[in-house]
Structures are given as C-alpha cells and as structure tokens.
Length: 296
Image (cartoon, rainbow, N blue to C red):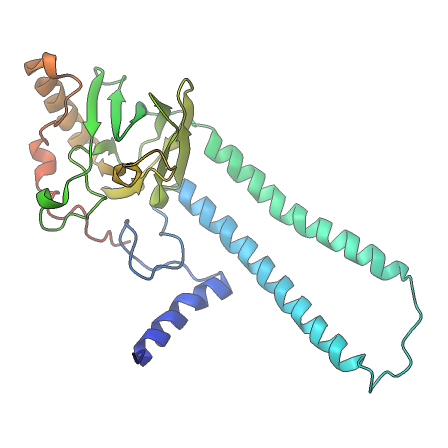
C-alpha cells in the first residue's frame, strides 16, 4: 500500500512543535484527536503549568541531545586511528571532571525549581469556591455536591446503540460532572471497591481514587465547555467504560442546574442517588455541541 505524501507532511507538522518545544498547541477539541502527538491544549491554570514545564524540559533535553551527538561525531572524526595514530595517555583532567559534575547539577536545579513549584501548586486547593466528592465504582462515577444541598449524581457511559449525533463513543455519559467555569473546585476523590483514577487531560487533573482514603485535587475550567477524561487505572473488565465528562457552565447556569437537580431528587427520594438524572433545560441545548471543538 502506497503511503500518500500528505501523511508525511502531517507527521512533520506534528513533530516540529515537539522538537522546538516553544510552539503553542493549536486550538483543538478538548477530547483526544486522531494522530495527536502533543498534549491536549490547556483550559486550566494547572494544565498550562504542566505544558510550560514540559516545554522547558523538552528544550533542555533537545540541547543536551544535540550537544552529545555533535560531541560523539567530533570525537569519531578527530580521534580516529588514521588522524590520531598515537593515542593520548591523559587519565585525568581536573577541569573536565569539575565541568561534567557541576553542569548536570545546575541543569537538575533548573528543572527541579519549577517542578517543585508546580507539584505544590497542583497539590493545594487555593481558597476553593466549591467542593465536589467524586467516588469511583465498578464501573461508574458518583458525584456529590455537599455545598449545594447534597445533590448526588451517578454517571455512566452511553452505550453504542444509544449514542446521539455528535456524542463521542466511550467518552460521553448520561450525567455529566457540572461545575461553574472560572471557579476553583475542590475534588475529594475516593473509591468503594478498587483503585480508580480521576483523569481529565485538558484540565491537568489526575488523582487516584483509593478505597478507604480521600485524596484531594482541584479543578478550574477557564471557559464554559465540555472536557473529557477517563479512568486510566486498570480497574477491571469494564475499565474502558468509565469515562469522565466535565461540563463547565456559567455561574447562573450552574445555579439553575442545582435547583433543578434538587427538585428532581426531592420528587423521587427513593431513587437517590439518581441513576439517570434528567438534564436541566439550561444544558439541553449543549448536548448537540458538547463534543465539538472549543475555540481558544
């Protein structure tokens, strides 16, 4: 089978940002795309910090690789047997030994300082505006809103035969995790059975959900939209069917959704937590466009 020339052009365009490390990722969907090589673009301050650190390390690695490669070529050419028949008997060089000890230490310091700052930034929830408890089950997610009347929602993936136009297979769910955009959301992750993983690439969020423990992380979506994730910890036979769909809405829309969710829960308390919470009217219009691109 002949590979079209366009394939190589596309691959080259994808590799150039990786080699340079300074090119911002293009505006793209908040879900994985075919042939995607770089990380998903940032829609939160956490993800932007991760990308900045990635680009810094990528530049350092590229410089080191080019330097070592050039040094090897120079040594092979300059000190081969023909050009240098009498090899040097030098066994120690104080300057070189100091250099190849001090320079790597300085490089590690340059990498460590922003790395430690980012780890601390991701680990601490700075004055959260709201708390959501996330519980992993085999095999679905449960979202509780203790600050908003203890609204409790179960989230399951949409079966192939039930997918609507525009919905993504193994990524869209019946009940999304709804949060207000621009607000700091503290997430308390736990599990009732095995280890799960709460992972949303475009928001820079990942924490394990471990039975008997409550682990904290936080989210902050820069703009309204739908952000997809999944459990990336192998948790059993339906591990691939634990997607996460975070729907960031305006503050007014979130208040409306909470009120409607409370009414739905109070109307049928025997079904709490709801297995299929009806989507509020304010989010119904977004269903058809939730999986489309968010333009930066």
